[in-house]
Amino acid sequence: MKSFSLWCDFIERGFLENEFEKHIKSGHFNGATSNPAIFANALKSDAYTKDILSLKASKMQAKEIYENLACADIKKAANLLKSEYKNGNGYISLEIDPFLAQDVGASIDEGRRLYKMINMPNVMIKVPASKEGYEIMSELSKDDISVNATLIFSKEQAIECAKAFQTGRKGKEGKEWHGVISVFVSRFDRAVDANLSDLKAKLGIANALLCYEAIEALGVDEIRTLFASSGVKAGSIGSDGKPLEADYYVKALKLPHSINTAPLETIQAHLLNKEDSALIEPNAVLFSDAKKTIEEISSHGIDLDALSLRLMDEGMEAFKKSFEEMLRAL
Image 1 (cartoon, rainbow, N blue to C red):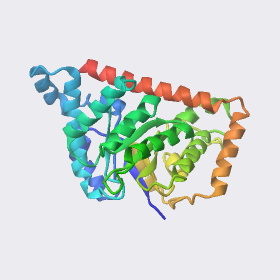
Image 2: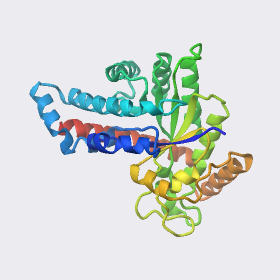
Image 3: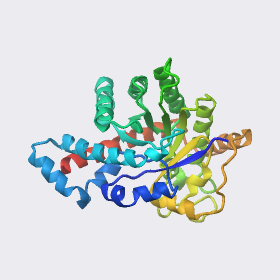
């Protein structure tokens, strides 16, 4: 059975210099991800103050300063992850400027430039799963640049991402490349749970399972589902009325040939939780139950298609806001 992977959804210079390698050597995670919100918070750390002042003194603009700092962190993480760089693991991802999301040409150019700037094979360029994004993913994949398709909330998006990857990789078989399709999970539950009783914390998992099923049906080893937004917010309640365990979404989606990228505290909670640590076997009953859950939730007046579109829009706006605030601070 193909393996399940844990990646760390966190990057910050102090963490990279002091703890990151220890976690890798201990087998706690074997890949990592980043996003504009993560970097916006990271760059507030004192670890960057000296470099920011030096780069400002050299007359660099805010975005140049960000790219200089972010690419240095991503390169360091990629170097530390080299020992895990096999079977689709050992990657670290960096997102294209979210304000370029609707500009196909500019996004492709930026993806290529950032990849070249970092100059490490185990880097994924992260691209939002929009209409424009599919073309961007395809072109970067054609250039042998591994891609993390992000902000996936529907099975239709997942399938379009996979098609974009396959189009880009046509005739390129045998060359090192991997793509991940990042399906967001807990945001569904935070959006609808207030209107549900016995179905709390169920929608995100059911939707993610159906996305996974569609991706796996393609049978492409180089394309994996990555479950994102898998941390549990304080105060989250399950269908039994009890607080959710910190690794609730990791355990529920521990499927072969998949990845879960989670905050460090979620990973640590999962490593401490010795129960339910086995892989979940994908079978017809699992996916049939997921469909039934979605049908039952839909009967409460929740339009999943409309919700998916809304969450995608909110995700893009959140990334733009974080990116803008970070640049303003620089």
